Image (cartoon, rainbow, N blue to C red):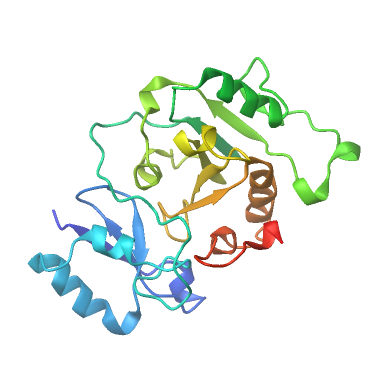
Length: 235
């Protein structure tokens, strides 16, 4: 099996974006875009072993482009390979909120409370009153996954676990950072533009992100903070 596959997806055909390289070896399903003019060079380096897929991920810009000029992400996507396999995630046509850190039970409960609380079917934001929605901080509607089978799950491992039967908007990971930093930031994983790329946002902002992605009002990269700059949602 080849170590990567090259996709000329809709972003390439209609948007003029770079082709998407998808990892098939270390973390199957994660992707990186590459400049079209350098595709042959990069593929040759990958196949010869001179370049590893991790190198591509470490050096992608906020647009998910390898050595792009869009600015370095403030929170680079982790490249640590998985120590074990993970089961498939539940199928949903909205967002998934997946707990990956289990050291702080009180922090987890506080996160769910801040998101409006989970109902008996493990949903947050399932019964929203439109008259009470703050458009500046649109509430997150998500299926909650609280299962130790996903302990330690990282962004690059997520895309292959999402069932293709539904168009899941995004996957938000409640990881160690969530319970250690102000604002309870969630690590949100791109499933489409550059699968496996991550963005770190305060939990109160993820609902707005999901809403804007769902209606194609904004792109994933617009929520990836640039190193050395203040994110627009903190301005």
